[in-house]
Image (cartoon, rainbow over all chains, first blue to last red; front, top):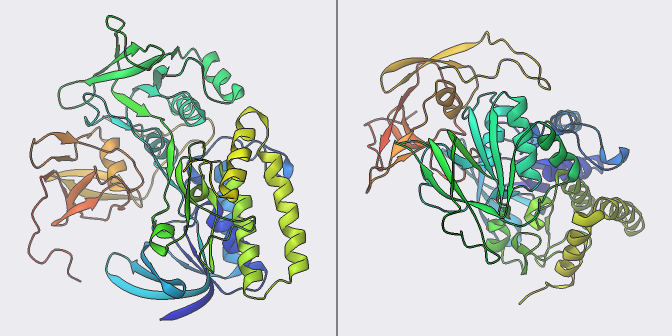
Length: 364
Length: 110
């Protein structure tokens, strides 16, 4: 069994920042990712980020990804790609399967879990037909693989993912036939929604998809108006000819490893469900296990990066590489930036939700 | 059918010079070196990757990040390979999978 100071699981925005921060402070770091290239979902985010200059606002996600990979390389940490962490045992021992054929045990004096999230789906008649997919899947196809999953798309969900992916589908040359939103109002930042609206995409609020139709693949979508209890209203169906239906219906934290490790969990609706409890240093209830990014609750890449830095610094402090005074100073600065990101009508809810998680949870 | 995005306002234009040949259900298909199998298939307009065991219902790509396993196919004789996270290789044999697929003798050995 090989031993590192800090083992980071997941090489997305949170994991890369955690690994970089830990390595900068002198830790010997192993970064593990199941994909053939690190970066998580950063490389499909070709839009500019929000926030202030120190949050890299105005910089596109993929450029941030490249910058982080460069830093990772310069710091000379160990990076294991095509490697899945399948188990976690006492004393921060991880079971890793590399290249689908080699099995290893590795240990970190501290472990930082940055495992991200998975898209939610909704089920309806015909939802398993080829052509129905997560909005994130379509985004991966167009922005990373540069392949259109279809020519004419219905987007289900008007949150940030729904409208950003819709706009990127337009940029990629697809037609977006409509965006449906079950709630009576649109869910995304105005600037993103407005761009899609200006491009002529119709929005249907208080509407949902009831059926996907087609012979062996999606050929049309049937949408319908919903009542105040979100039940489709008879006779309100509209048929829209599309070959692709994208589901942008939220995300759920991927927290299995924290669960296996025996971390305390809390439930929080705003943050996407069951999340590991953590303190203001991103430490879980299990000694030596830290978390950052979407595993702690669904937010954005910008907050994930800050949480990653915080977890990296905290883990480095826990193994004696940073003294308490310096940790407090850095943690204070990061929290200022996190608070600045968690403001406005969307951010404020997340800020409250985060406080509830740290306090022990909002619902039992 | 070519679904590749060769011109893009943000990502710029692209020309591919490194190509590989794969075989999909015996048919030769040109793919881009390093791309995922699912990407090569969608680029050619192929949307059905497998049929389910019980109802023989068609399935294609769903999550695109290796989580849902809806896009699995038989690759070089090995069934249940997640095509959205498996890169193409020269001469790779990709087959539409029926049910749980069949393991070809010797497949997956080093």
